[in-house]
Amino acid sequence: MRYAGLGIQLAVILVVFVLAGQWADRKLGTGGIITIVAAFVGFGGTMYSLIRALNRKDDAGE
Image (cartoon, rainbow, N blue to C red; front, top):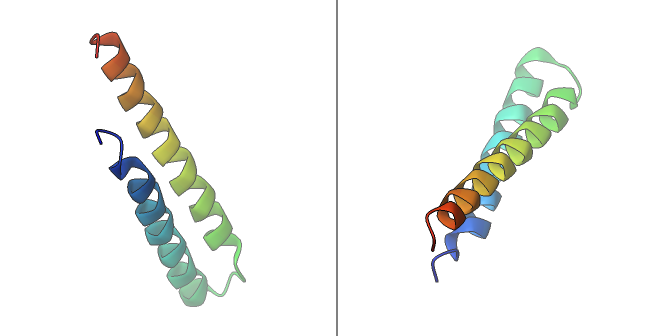
């Protein structure tokens, strides 16, 4: 149960970044480029955070 929320965290952050990217695309008229970049940044940042959290728990002996 300890890691049950990790998938939900990934999904929520990805949705937030995509929605922010769509909003920025509409404001700036960039045609979807910011949405794509935001999705990659959100996914990459979340994966980095999850890997660090999992490694930190492994180093603590859990």
